[in-house]
Image 1 (tube, rainbow, N blue to C red):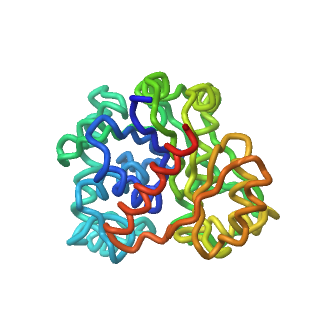
Image 2 (spheres, helix red, strand yellow):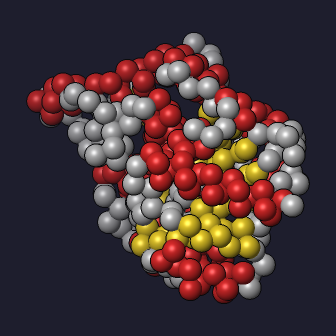
Length: 315
């Protein structure tokens, strides 16, 4: 196999692995399909949180302490919004705001989200191919006993507190997969990697785009995921809480069960090594590694281990 590595990624957790992969793979050898179900309009601007997490990570601009947004951020805009008693539930730093303003302007000029994302990546000095999962609008809706919530209202405004009963992806039936992602799948890819992102609201929107799953399965490449659950806990975000509320096994077993129809292999942490045999009984191979990515070195080490695991499966 001589083609690229395709990675399906959500936000912060996925961006960490993508950064590690970007230090190993050259330019177009890395294609990243980013979830856009989290995207929404705020103050008339198009906000793409997962795409931006990847852009900021690969450009060295991500805020390592906060876990989201840009480093060395200032907050003059948000302070003025608060002074004016405007909606301040979604924080927009001044530097981050510039990204959203440019994106929104380019979209208004008629550029596709894919073209805009590629242009921003170039401006940030990124050589990897960062792609939205689709150019068509898709909106993740979180279903709760009290009613449906737009994803950012659930995630940011409500701080993930409502109980989750399910999810809906508005617009998904009409969405077309990104042509560059499909091209990567047809180019004899070395591997397809599912980053350690939330399986329900970060990865499922990508997989549910009509034609995407069939194209992934038909690519004749090893499909490997890195578990976002370690020791029964989510590394970042509400994945474990969601799994519990949905009645799923909150462990790497639950992750394996969720992806069992697509995966060839699953990378799990040393803390979960005792579950390897049970996962393998589901028909997939298991690789045990340190999956906690605390710095650049651990991101690169995990990325290399994942690539090596995929190569072993392909043999």
